[in-house]
Amino acid sequence: MMEVFSLTKPLWEIALRATVVYFGLVLLLQVIPKRDADLPPPGVPRS
Image 1 (cartoon, rainbow, N blue to C red):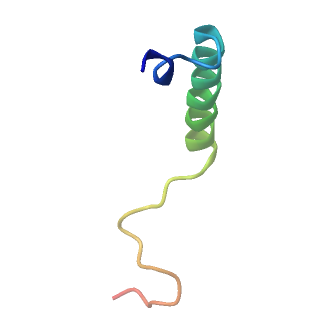
Image 2 (image 1 turned 135 degrees about the vertical axis):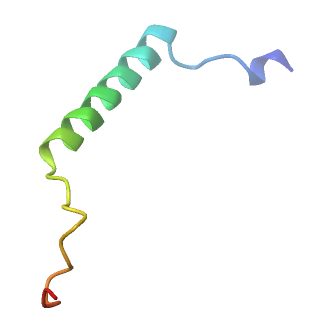
């Protein structure tokens, strides 16, 4: 039963992959411009 919970990859590799994904997402969120909440969607005239 304990072999079900055994890891197939070393713990350092899991931590490294998680760190790379985390920093990749942070970088992606910095690069993508944030939408301005007070602007209407395209095609809708301002009132």
